[in-house]
Amino acid sequence: MRKIKINKNKVKDYPTFTVGYGRENFAIKYPVNPREGVCDACGKSIAEHQITVTQLHHWVYQYKTAAIKKDPYKVLDNLVEFCFGCHKVGDSLREILYLKKERLITVIQVGLLMPTEMKEKLDWVAKAWLVARKTDKKKVRLEEFIEDE
Image (cartoon, rainbow, N blue to C red; front, side):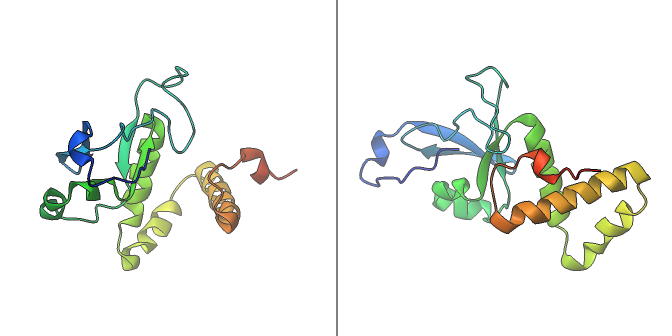
C-alpha cells in the first residue's frame, strides 16, 4: 500500500479515493491511489495477472467513526493491502489476537483438540514465526524452516 506524505496546502487538488473502515466507507484526498495492486504479504500483483483484485485490511480499528469523520486520513492507520487469500489469513489472525489475554488460553485448548496432522502443521507455523520474528523479516523463504529429517 502506498503511504505518502500529504501536503496540506495541495489537498484540494488531490483526487478522491474511497477506503473502507469497518462497515463504513470514507473518502480521502490523496496524491495517488493508496492501492498499489500488489499484496503486501505474498507479493502477488494485479499488473502481472497473478490476482485480479486487492483488498485493504485494517489490523486494528483504532478509531471511532466520529474521529475518522473529523480526520479522514486516520483511516490509513494500521492498514495493509492484501490479495484475497492473504486477507483471509489476516482476518483470522486479527480475530484470534483481538481476544483478551485471559481468553487466549482458549486458542491453546481448541488447538489441542485438532488431529495430529494439524497440530504438527501448527507446530511448524509457530517455530517459523519465532525464527522470522527474530529479525522481523517481511519476506520469509519456507525452506528456511524445513528441517532435514
